[in-house]
Length: 83
Image (cartoon, rainbow, N blue to C red; front, side, top):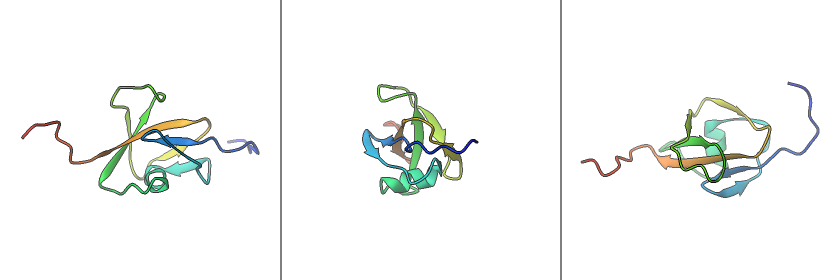
């Protein structure tokens, strides 16, 4: 990746804006920005208005932040009302 001196774009987690410390972060580090623990799963969205489930970002997976990214953090144990 070429060296880039431009500002690092923000990330949005559950619609809250955060300033990442670097352009490459793991899923766990992105969750930590928002104080979200390992009991939640991180999902990358296609934008703020994305109503889909999004794409799962694993805790050890590296994400390149080259533009503003939107994520949703959801509890891992959710069952959608299924008993």
